[in-house]
Image 1: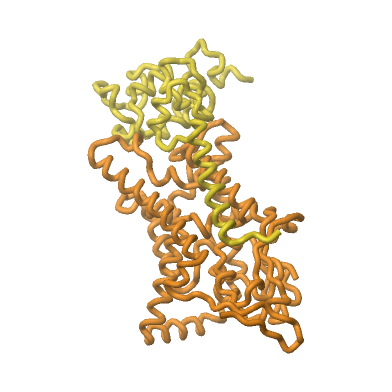
Image 2 (image 1 turned 45 degrees about the horizontal axis):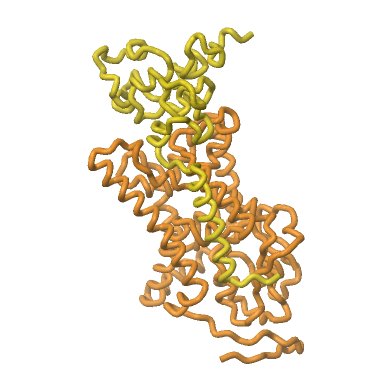
Length: 149
Length: 329
């Protein structure tokens, strides 16, 4: 079947932008981290962590308690929000990384970066601490790795 | 305007069509394509400028859409993390995944048309190549110098085919590296990311790659797409199964070679009967350049293209007897 060039061009545009439009219509379009954070109800996508856990950094997956939780920690997130989502005290994080004890919970992680602290180091620390943020002791999904044979 | 012609063999050729040149070329399908490319580039530019303005006004970086969020390749880089942990590697959003799906759908239904019609980096390379062509025509000494340079570089043409394999290596490295390390290992050398990040300290090596790509585009059309683009490699692999392909109708073709000369990806279109190369960007420059109406046609139908070959075969000569690589005779 012969395809006219103009039809070919229209097909390209229809498929590409149609897919984007369909995802937007379905609420599956997210192009900023903040959308994740404010996406109460979580369902924007993988790692969203479901709808429970009001103390999570909502929708970001930080409180998911699985491996994606640690990976979901972003530099723009406030240390207090991450601590809440992970179920740890801010003071504990500050102490673990030798950060000033008077650090405000609203401080973005990236503003705290130094030789002793980085977002990736925090991710590793949170993951090792309990299988990822959200790992409150009573949460079986977040059981520490040492319980596994 | 057009006339029928008869070859020495007695075959009736298609009527002659005068190819459009200069601005007149923008009236046809190429105008449609250029408008689409320019539109996409402007959208990305708008996002980049808007983000810079918002951040300058005090908005946190994480709250404003970045140009990176509009790159389909991010969606492919996060596949490993997505499958293993259900999350994304840093700097990737759901928009990247949606765009990756859209690009792969385009690849299936319209071959490499994402590269030829939508990708802003491809558009920038086209602009650079167009500028080089303009300068060559308008400034004769420059034209002579560039032709002399090309003649001197002719013996190096043998590296073209093996170099085309590089993009598959880059694809494997970027996707597997992101899966293994949980970060976008390709990001540091990505010229597109460097362009979006202009003026920021993170651009470094990527800016160097961008500079090399732009300089190379003065001499080789779509240098990045030919040799190193991992997204093009991925869409190319999918395009291999597309039911849409270009076909050269030998009976209507005068074997003038205008199609091959026009192909920005350097495919030997003139000696093929079916253009099914993963490298084809669906730009339709060959169709536009063809002086014989009906000699090059887009067709859709089963069966889909045969097995993947990573390299276009060499041109088989004017007879077009056996050029199954890019195409099949």
